[in-house]
Image (cartoon, rainbow, N blue to C red; front, side, top):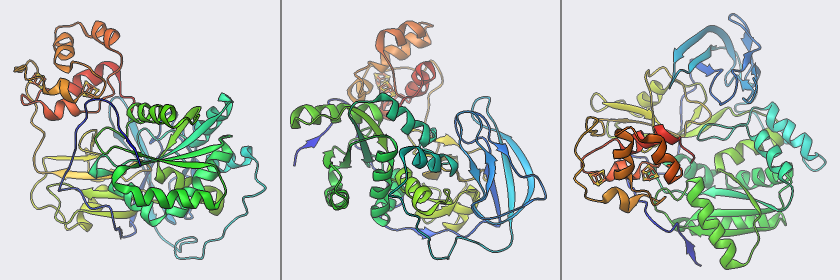
Length: 432
Ligand code: SF4
Ligand code: SF4
């Protein structure tokens, strides 16, 4: 079977400090859970409960603001505080703190399945919206909006199930694919109906051929048009731009017409399935916990709202004082300022490293080795752009060169440790 890869640049990335993606431990239920009201793009969710109120597991506790998503309690208990802290940029995070008390209505109980057959696309999107389903990665865009936008496009379209593991820190998604394969496919079928999409395409890393075959067989059992494309394992194959490049190439070579593409990951699809088939919000997610400072890296199934410090403690704690703690992959990680910050719907990985990435002072010396040019998947000359930006020609550089999607490849290979990606991304924004 042909393997499709993006045409230039990229790197093969391995990290022995990331956990393996073949099993998961169940994390302890949090005694205190911290549920942010401002974790998605768009407006802050408006709390529907206040300090002193009792909440049930899965109860709505924040109603979506403009462009954001509903927020639910992930444990039963009592709201004991409303807290806030400074996030990235000018963002102020606000969260309800719930002290776990009382009994669970969902955990450990038999799942009740609701019939799906007669639900209209509108009803499916309403359930997906009511249960606060967002993309479980990146910015966490509300999925009902994405589906509605897809429907409005009219014409042929394809739902791409992105099972591309070009980064070992995607171990949580890999685990979920293996443990909930049927739910991922059912979620994809629901999403397709809700978005008026007529075809599924499983985009799977070349090393996971068997997984791809199982996904395809599951969709075929449901008698829904579906196909499988194997893609390369070089980072950033999973980025939207690089994935679309290979899918358009696949379309041309195989003579299939894909139309417009909606790309969703396995965790998001499993959450869609839970919202519609079980009528429940996202209560937990798989998270890869590791890094050189962590004693026993592992993938954990974690209740949302669990504090990050508790996850590290469950992994045996630190071997030494970490120099860098962040969520996401080391490529694109967002720094964690406080170990009391919670796991949210988009936290697919958290890591603690003993060493900081070496970064030269602004104006450090470039030795013109050309490494950054060789790995840039967009075909930029990061050295030249960086010099232009440092020299005050930023807008000219961006206008001339298109969009840097902040994949971080150039920065990773730069022997002078110049903050290339950081500087260029600050200029044009990330699009992955
Ligand atoms: S961060 Fe930007 S300039 Fe650097 S390799 Fe990626 S796309 Fe190219
Ligand atoms: S990799 Fe770093 S040192 Fe080498 S050319 Fe690029 S910016 Fe200069």
